[in-house]
Image 1: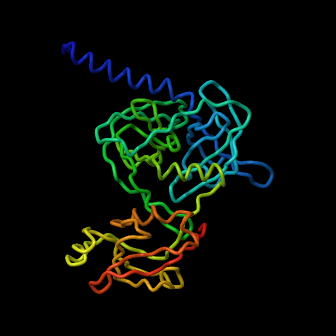
Image 2: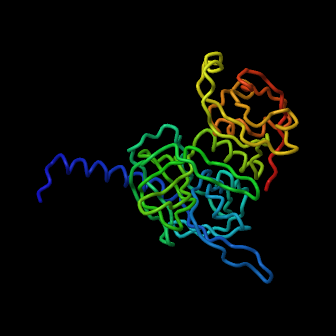
Image 3: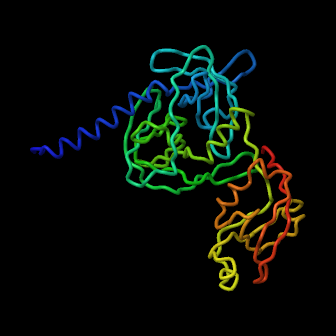
Length: 319
């Protein structure tokens, strides 16, 4: 079947974007061989991908790739094999930072996933099934997905996860998802089914996590001790606050900061320290290290009336 000139031009434009992104990012992406120390030596624990984010050796990957590892080796497409150690992991965002030693790295440029649009071209680069420097391309299939994560007894939803139809396979985890300009907008984290992959977004929220992992080896979160879900605000209170949704308190953990502050089940949280709360994600974003030990005003609806309580979050335990 004949292909007209317009279709050829479109194909050439598509190929041009993908090849340009591949050339820019393939040198930045490493294949990881993860090792765990055992009596008598080290044992191979798994594999994955990572993307260099600084020239002096820091790489970004998925927490589940290196969660049980003390280190391992990172192999680049130019043939270099560098030893790495784990700097910090944050299982609740499925992000981790490792550091390779012994060579200057070509660092990728980080983008902002908050600017993505459904249907936008994205390129995934990683090491699926051990094939280093593999490139797949597709589109953003959906935005705003949530990915459940767990660390010990703590659980959390990673918000605004990117869904893409770019082919992902085992070994892609920790690799780069890039936009058409070669900026890393996501870290590939899961294969959710045939033609369905998920990536943790790179945005202002996750940049804070990455920076904390590089500087301190961990990301501190504040803890209130409630479980909740979104709920419409009663009409009278909604008219008073100028908003339609809040977060209903479904459960209050015994002995938690929320219980000590007098927060009760069926309370409807409107805002925390002046920041509106319309969903669980809003509440999660506010529970960062700066909130630990600081008295916060929580405005809520109780028995149809708007009231406020003071609560002082503590640090969320590691597990």
